[in-house]
Amino acid sequence: MLIDKNSPIGVFDSGIGGLSVLRQFIRFLPSENYVYLGDTARVPYGNKSGHTVETYAKELTKFLLSKGVKIIISACNTVSALALDIVKQTAGDIPVIGMIEPAASAALRSTRNGKIGIIGTRATIGSNAYLHEIQKLESGSNYEVYSKACPLFVPIVEEGLLRHEAAKLIVEEYLHELRSKEVDTLVLGCTHYPLLTHLISDFMPDTTLIDTGEHSSVTALRLLAEKNLLLNPDLKFIDKPKIQFHVTDLPTNFFEQAKNFLGFEIDKPHLTDLTDLS
Amino acid sequence: MLIDKNSPIGVFDSGIGGLSVLRQFIRFLPSENYVYLGDTARVPYGNKSGHTVETYAKELTKFLLSKGVKIIISACNTVSALALDIVKQTAGDIPVIGMIEPAASAALRSTRNGKIGIIGTRATIGSNAYLHEIQKLESGSNYEVYSKACPLFVPIVEEGLLRHEAAKLIVEEYLHELRSKEVDTLVLGCTHYPLLTHLISDFMPDTTLIDTGEHSSVTALRLLAEKNLLLNPDLKFIDKPKIQFHVTDLPTNFFEQAKNFLGFEIDKPHLTDLTDLS
Image (tube, rainbow over all chains, first blue to last red; front, top):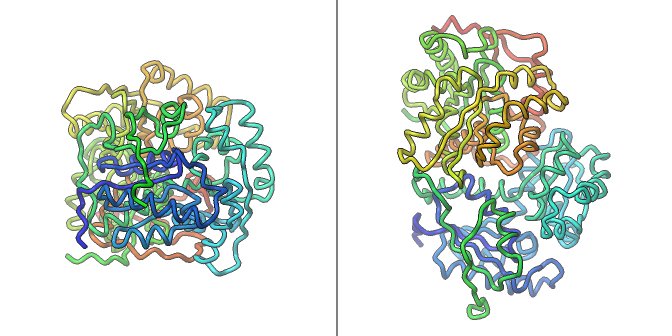
């Protein structure tokens, strides 16, 4: 199948956290067209069964395919951990990039002392997806991986308490152990966590933070460039990136949160019913 | 001329500030081989005449060519501003990437309110190189550019005062005007400034900082990927990136500074006499 370079880049997530991933894509590929799909009606996926996550992942993929995307980014850590194979099967010739591999690979290449920390939701940490990916990439034993679930980070971000003293204290509470282990590289294994970068960096100034969105966007850039599927850089001043937003529900403080994740205000999203496609 | 993808990436700078650029390259292209050349005997270039800078730029370029590089990165802002054409002429078929265009382009694409700040040394700001590049890329008038020379930032970084209270006060002194202009995008137009990111971000939390090394590395990644000149990602755990260091002089606190810029300790560099090649 011939893929058209003029087609948009498709990004899906269980909710709006994936907008932090989209933000990184826009940073490095600002001239591209984007379709973003957030399954806000069924978020979060973290505690759902593997079978349900697979069913949802298939629906998200089919929706983006129906929009004619040239690549699919699974910005959802849960889908990336549990159902990326289903996404790839469903996508056929359209390339798929998840969150786990680019970040695991970046962590392995970033560490100098071999001590890597992983933080994420309970579900992500419990799945050991990052640990398994690191072990798959590098079977040696010259590194140590320390994982820590940080369940309060998501609600802190969603309540907008990004500079609150309480947020600082919770960062210290969750991360003091990883700091005492002297991890020199820390994977932010949840799309919400990049919004806490300033607090995490203040607490662990010598630790390299791995932003899954950043590394997946550079992975996508490379893959698309090698297949000659990138748009020519459009050097015009862009008031707003070209993004089509789709959500399955419009939560109350959607626009405020979206602005926190993306860095700018978004247009009204389309309300979408995914179950039509399943 | 056929370029060999196994050749190293060449990076030159007037001194060791370019190591902050190299750090970004390693972040996104960790499997590549690198040759770094710092003209530490003749640093800084900022106040030298255009003719002298051109002569030096030619020597730096010839040196990297003699190492068989597949691309040349001018990590020096002064060379990028005053002598990039000479570098390109000297390099022939080998592609050349400077600091100005990738950062100017990133700034134009990042701003939402059209207010862009540029900071750099007196020489860089005086040359108006970033402003001219922005105007070249976008001839419209729907943006405003504010420039500010920050002469104390380089010595602060070189003295390692990265977390000193005085550094914080000087950041506030230099940047309060740009903050009051509400620039939403700030170009760090000097290779030393990324080491002050934490202080600048604390003072201007809603401003997007443009790191010239980051954007030049992503520009190089794209260019090399499109020409099929990247090494296959080597997924092995890397203790240290493969870098050959060359300097024209070994300054007293070289290793300490290099570690600050690169994030890890470097091997003893080769001492090189550039005048052999001129």
